[in-house]
Image (cartoon, rainbow, N blue to C red; front, side, top):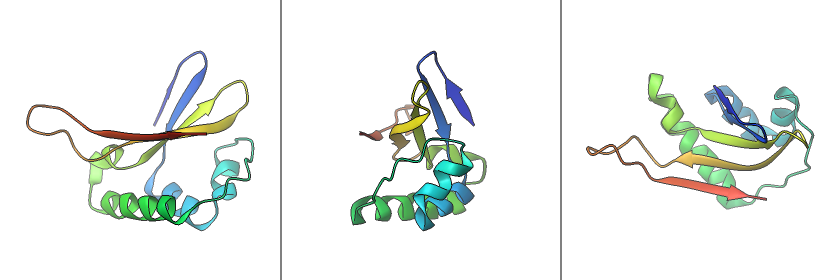
Length: 102
């Protein structure tokens, strides 16, 4: 799934794409036809991706609540950040998000 505006694209990763990212980030960027960034993961990011990918395994149609959405700058055709939901909405419809840029 993808959402877009004049300046940005938000690309929701599939479970397979999350697995690709865990193995090799540049392979994901190439698959998405994006500029390769040379991004280096720290242990915290790798663990976050593993955790969310595991939650996606049993989420079915609700996987979009557990994946990471890549924030792509259209002019650079490059990932500039990511955003994700912490879980499904609570009883009142509220959600918590996490994000990073840079």
